[in-house]
Length: 147
Image (cartoon, rainbow, N blue to C red):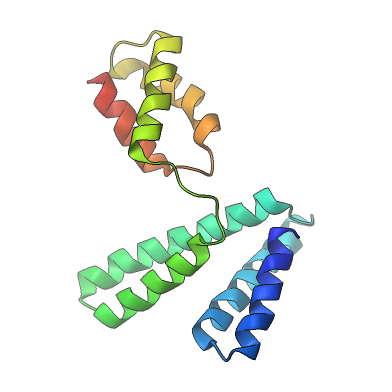
């Protein structure tokens, strides 16, 4: 069963179980996937669906930051719950230690010694961690190792 079918099956389960929050989030995800398919005129595979889910999580994280600054605790809680629900459909994210290990290997391979060569390290490292690590965290780890 591919990821899109899993989302649909979980939507049906949520509707039968009267889980309104889960139902609404899954409907929104399926609508975003369908919109992306219509816009790009291709049927998304699991990797494409995961990209859509990551964008949705990123939107939630930005909203959480905005709501936190505005002091809207209820909205922060709702967005956090939605982001956690969406994250459950994505592969497990890498830990900082795993990223650091890969970054050390990439630095050794490229022979970079200072922050000026950070682009070389990042270009070698990002394909290895794509979809499994946040780009900001990867950047932070590499910057820390090069200083």
